Picture (cartoon, rainbow, N blue to C red):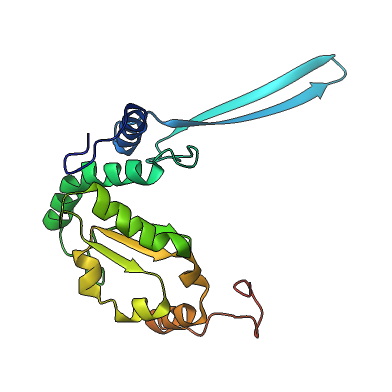
Length: 191
């Protein structure tokens, strides 16, 4: 069970959580990429096949269970199980010039799920154990400080925010670049 949960997970949820914790481990089994190529050598009447395997260590995975299974609770369980280690790692990390140390897990959801995520965090975890920043609008984003993000354990963001004109304008000014193409100017971000 996650160490700071108020509501225990069901056995099938614990099975998924155990798999997720194992996937986050540096010792997780590698994903094996496989490439197969075939050719027919007509003069000889042979078929040749070449096969290459490449193990690749990939942390994480996809939790794609049915609606109502408890994917949010399982994901919160993963965050809770790894939170102490993440906090310690960020605290012990050396400052990197020009970088901001952040320990938060970024959760990007459809706009209608921002409040649901916040309520699920309150429902499942012990009071004040996990610090959350919820950003559902450009106004929320503009009122959020870097210190808010640095103190957060989870940042829940509405996916629609990344398409808003205000966000793209802010992004280009922070990055010190020319404006990002929009609907009027065409380009990749037009839709």
